[in-house]
Length: 395
Length: 86
Image 1 (cartoon, rainbow over the protein chains, first blue to last red):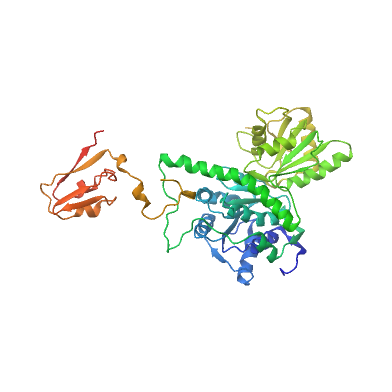
Image 2: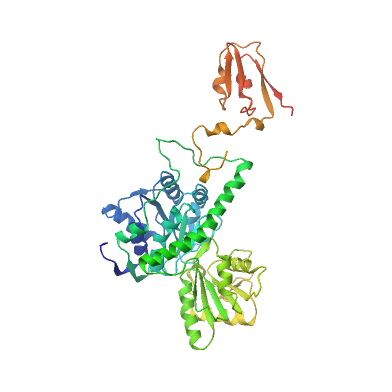
């Protein structure tokens, strides 16, 4: 199957599984949870069928799955896991350790809302909870990008200037369960692009080491600084890897950011993940009506591309952030970051932040146009669009 | 001592981290009733009690954290914890 590059119609989850298989991970450990299940089902089938030579560790929880891949990575293996929502939150404690130990694990964070109330449907509140873990965070817009991002992710994570875990945010159901044509690279191409992982340190009985040492106040600050520095280095590496990927596979969907019709745009929508595709379609429609509308996609949420964003959208009059998350008691997470990017800059556009699509609510053309109308009237710090007042109980 | 990537440490590197500064009380070996049983040395969690001679134990104060286990466990009360004066 891998001899010739083929375009095939695949479910998003299967596409990710194929990409991970092509990256030849040594160890996979995951706990099934909707809507991540199909990814790990496919991978476990591949291992069982002998199509992928990897250790597939069955575990009793996401905390264990994360711990198993942490251990595998510490032993020098290329390790992969996937999860979503509550499972992601259960992993959280281990995720900080993966980053702190500088282990280049790749994790698919299928995006789903979080409890309570319980939901299995999509938004991106789960992986944004890992904002400060030290993970590099990339968000995929469509299935091809999700597939490509996984191949890039291992290369970014394992680069010795970075050596950090990478998570790929991928909208649950919207991407994982929809079928799209995707171009599958060949094994030979991926092998050329992604050489085997060469760890700096790894656990082996032949040369014992201690990983995860305790540090006193005279060392901890420096250790955290080194992590922060690695995140800064990742900026350059993400750009380089995206460029190298383009040369090898002929596809480019942005590096830290991607822009669509932003050059002369007066109004620019900003978002992450699959919502960007909706916004592209609406921008295209509005352009036909003569309105100068563009879209900025945030592809890398960590490291956060402050400068690139300012450069891309400071020419606009109005910036509209549409996001499927809310930092309760503050504003949308992305809106906070974009506002921070503009502090102290000249030519600051007006900015409105809208919370949309929580817990799987569809973000329709009407939703976006309503946001556009509101943002033109006045600036919104954090407004929930499509809120249904009839459902709200008076307290 | 420099921090390695991810805080990885080679075997024996805990010797570089002198923990004597943590001490509030230090063990005074009285050398009066010592029976040479060696319990103080065996039970020291830091492994920093050494034997200079017969019935002559001492603690390496560069590492001794002053936990007091040696004084507590000495069957003949030949070790006393004294406040550290700095």
